[in-house]
Length: 120
Ligand code: 5GP
Image 1 (cartoon, rainbow, N blue to C red):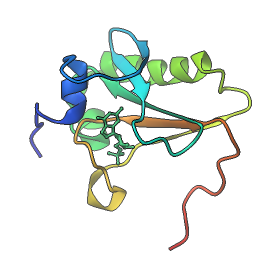
Image 2 (tube, helix red, strand yellow):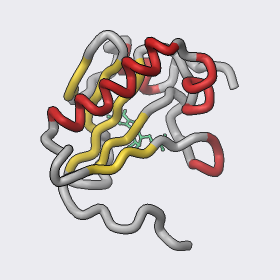
Image 3 (tube, protein in one colour):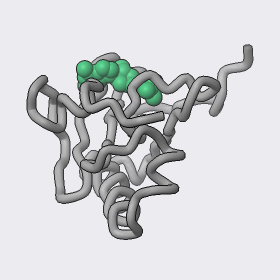
Image 4 (cartoon, helix red, strand yellow):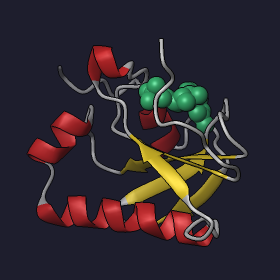
């Protein structure tokens, strides 16, 4: 799947639509999810144009991958989630129900998060 530069997170990265910014460095931007699923729900996105976890893990440089995942940890520390804890999640593709085609990691926290997956 080719990267769509008009996806909503690309627009946020370009400053074309607003976000509530939590953290930014050379590799990543973190901002509050517009529809939070927990008391803390932050999205961390790489600055590079990667569609998904599959694309990012396969095509990004070692520096981009290291920088991005260091940023995820830094965001969680900044939000004081390391203790009592938090959850990260990345949806990929149809079965993963990914909605926005720019790779992102969700950080959830602020309460006991319950079972990892809802039984359906
Ligand atoms: P996905 O299902 O792709 O893993 O998650 C996409 C997430 O992006 C959803 O949790 C959704 O609420 C969030 N989202 C979609 N559009 C916007 C937006 O314009 N701004 C922000 N801050 N979050 C968005």
